[in-house]
Picture 1 (cartoon, helix red, strand yellow):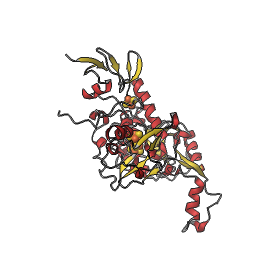
Picture 2 (spheres, chains in turn yellow, blue; picture 1 turned 90 degrees about the vertical axis):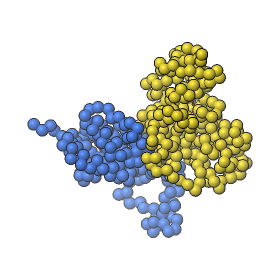
Picture 3 (cartoon, helix red, strand yellow; picture 1 turned 90 degrees about the horizontal axis):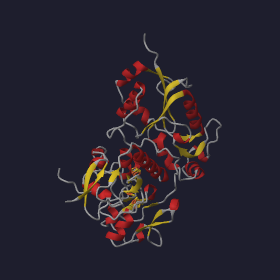
Picture 4 (cartoon, rainbow over the protein chains, first blue to last red; picture 1 turned 45 degrees about the horizontal axis):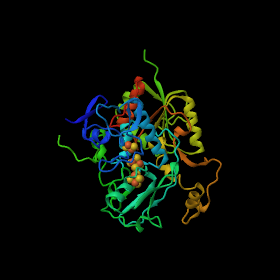
Length: 238
Length: 180
Ligand code: SF4
Ligand code: SF4
Ligand code: FES
């Protein structure tokens, strides 16, 4: 018999070693998340996946459930905090969705829709971050980086290349390219790398194609993010 | 007896009038709307001075001193202020100049061949002074409601307006909430 915990009153089965979010997503239950990716080890940095367990807030992408555990996720309080975190991600970077090729396919944007984010609320930083168009096939627009480290994990753990790294601490944290010049062209990054395909937002983008899918037919035009549970999970037959 | 109509004012600050065009896309619903409201200051009426209004719709962010003045005046005269569209909400396309110093932009536009205005940066006292950066309107005044989109669709604007007129909270579901 499999062990279970409850998530907002629903019974969720889990296997040993799974995290709360993995078990929830497997059971078809959405918990907002940005730095979690079904294929990668947890990073636990964005805190969007925060849930309440026994009165304490904790990241559901790092905590493993225990038999009978009671977990709350879809509460007004948690969603208000998630919305505030999302607003901070928007104002810390430069997110001009109408001119972003990721728009409609972006996890950050779709999460903000889910949370009913109508305004960025805070004062905008309007940072001045460089665009790296040096590579033949890919460009980097760091204005939209949310420091989820997925490209770092993909390049290191799957591609075995270490093309990307997070540098600095706290508010100074930023993504760097591991080359003396700091340019993507001076690394062994290639279009077939896993790291080329994991960015949840519009930073790591293929060149020579843009806005290829018309508005109305993009991932999150079709249905909202919670209906996918995670749009990167293999679709289950329903 | 006919109820007194609510007054609505609208303005485009650092915007492109796209939100106003989208507003007009409510098409024949405009007839229904003017049963209940009267337009005060607005590009639709050409009234220049705003009076006391129930609702103010602001398109565009703040790129110059006049924008700030007009916005504050709207806030003083409107019970409910609504930010309409991406530029009012986050600065939008005009704010993409923000990482570049203003002096460098003026230099590039007017002093670099084949520059505009005979290579002289315009300095007429009639011209509003540009701000160093373009700002969303919530950074300067309190904003009561926000309608995201570039532009928000006519249906989205209609939902918010009808909700406000009916005294209920607007609800923008999946089909109506877009940042692009
Ligand atoms: S990365 Fe996402 S949220 Fe940011 S500008 Fe692009 S679509 Fe918008
Ligand atoms: S570039 Fe993309 S994948 Fe890499 S840290 Fe930034 S947001 Fe995450
Ligand atoms: S998804 Fe858990 S901290 Fe980001």
